[in-house]
Length: 573
Figure (cartoon, rainbow, N blue to C red):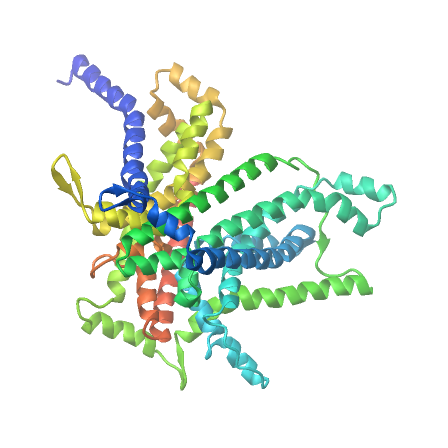
C-alpha cells in the first residue's frame, strides 16, 4: 500500500476531490441561497396572492387602494426617508470638505473611523439616542445647566431623522471625499488662469465633478432609510410606523397574509430603488479616476483675514455638531449605564447579574444572549465566507454569465431582513412537506442561515474587485503545471486577496452581531435570542438595564473587531 501504486492512487483521489471541490462548493452555495433566501422570499410572495388555496390579488389590491397603507405607512416611509437623506447629505458634505481639502494630524485615522457607524448594531445606537435625547437624557441635563429646556425628542420624527443621519452621513462623507480627492487640480488651475475666481472655479469645475458622488450617496441613503427597522421601532414606535415596523406589528398580531402583501409591495419598491441605483452607479463609475489631486490646506490658518477665520470657525461649529450627533449618543449610553437620579451607580449592571442568577427560564438573560451572539457570529462567518468567495470567483471571470450570477446573488442586498425572516418563519420554521416528510428548520440553524444570507454579499463585494484585478496568467500558469482550479485558488488567488477575505469576514461577523430585523422574528424561547434582541426586550421595561446591555454589546463588538483586525493583519503578513 505504500509503494508507487499506492502513492499514485492517493494522488489520483486527491486530484479527483480537488476537481470536484469548486463545482461542489458552487452547487452548495446555490442550494443554500435557494433554500434560505429565494424560497422564503417566494413564500412571502405566494402568501400575498394565494388565499385559502385560491389565487387572488385582493390582499395586494387592498394595500394599494388603502389610504392608510398608501399615505400613513408607505407615504410616511418615503417622507422620513427623504428627510433622512437631506439631513445625511447636509451633515456629510461639510465632513467631506474638511477631509478632502485640509491637512491635520489624525486625518487618515478620522477618515478610517467613518466606517464605524456601518458596524455598530442599530438597536445599540437607538439606545444611545434614547440616553442622549430622552427627557432625562444628556441633552436635557446640559440644557438644564444653562436654564433651558427640557425638550422632548423621543418618539418624534426629528429623532428618527437624526439617528438615520448618524448612520448615513458617514456614507455620504466617504463617497464625496473620494470624489473630491480625485478632482484634477489642473482643471482648476486652468480655470483660474483664465480669470475665474476661486468661487467661480469651484462652481464651474469642482462642483460638477462632485454631483455624481453626492447623488450616489443620497440614493443609497434613501434606499437604506426606506427599509430602516430598529431605529424607527425604538425611537418612533408604532405611532411613527414605517413599512418595516408595520410588517413586524402584523406578524406579532399573527396577521400573516396582510404582512405578506405589505412585504411584497415593499420588496417591489426596494427592488426598483436598487435597480435605479445600480443603473446610475454603472453610468457614473470611473469618472474622475487618475486625476492629479488638489493640494490640501493646513487646518492651522496661515493668516488672520476675515475669510480664513470664518472658514475655520465654520469647521469648529461643524465639529461641535459632530460631537453632539456622533459621539454624544454612544457616550450618553455608557454614562446612563452607570448613573441614576442619585448619581453614580452600578445598579443596572447588578440587575443583569441578578437576572442571570435568578431569572426564570422564559425571561431574557444576558449570558445566553452574549453566547448566542458569538456562536451565531462565528457560524455566520463559516457559512458566509465560502459562499462569498465562490460567488466572487464565478462572477469575476465568466463574462455575461458572471454578471448574471452577480445580479442573482446580490438579491439579499435588495430585500429587507424582516421579509427574509417572515419568509423563513412561514416556510422552514413552521415546516415544509418534502416528498412526504415534514422539513422543519428552527432556532440556531434558521438564524444563522438568515445572518449568512445577509452577510455573504459583503464578502463578495470585498473579494470580487481584488480577484478581478489579478493577472489571469497566474492561474493559467498554475493550471498548465497540473494544478486543479481549486488548488490554484487556494495556493495563488486567496493569498493575493487575503485583505479582502479578512475584511469580508469582519463585515460578516459584525453584521451577525448587530442583526436585528430577522432575528427578532425568528428568536423564540430562551435558546436563540441575541444581544440586540435582549437590548430591545430590556428597553421595553426600563432604560437603565437596556443601556447596561447595550454597553456590553459595544464592548464585545469592539473587542471582536480588535481580534479580527489583529488576526487579519498577521494572516496578511
